[in-house]
Length: 214
Image (cartoon, rainbow, N blue to C red; front, side):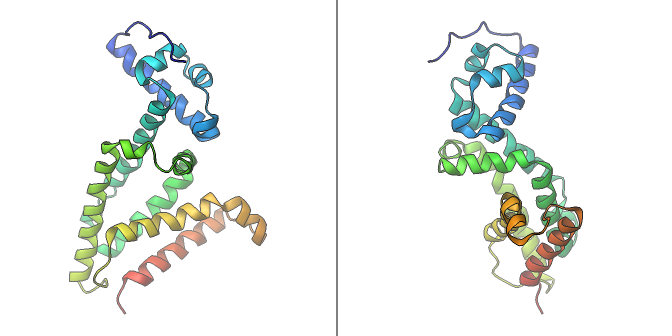
């Protein structure tokens, strides 16, 4: 049942409180999913009154969407720092593969959020024009890399940048998302340092083997 709104905080306190709430909610949603997350625990993690969460975010679904948007802002913002337009096309692809792999390893909570949202058939993301707009620059940048590679005689023609990005993300996502079961099935430590290096090398070989012309 919605709580009585708290008194409106001062702007500086408001910014800090919202950051604290989003940080706490990220940990809660990553650990328990949307269904298992509890607003009481988020308030306790954030060190705020639960009424303040409802004041800023209205309900748990709105808070979950805010966490998702912030998570996508994080990965998209760091991707922009790769300077893919400033390096040769093969190096650009290697950078994107390496970044995606290492980002997922460093941010397992991002994968947990994606798993939770997929269980809900992207019900929250469908409401977010912000998230969709974040992907346009990435697709345009990758399309430019592919075009430069094709004009230089390096890459095959007709590669869909969206399909390519999904393949790059999928090679990392499936491996990391299923590492515990796969490690057990194949009796190998798939998260060991050596295995991580081997996996990244394998992904580069697969993607560039497809892209690079003989």
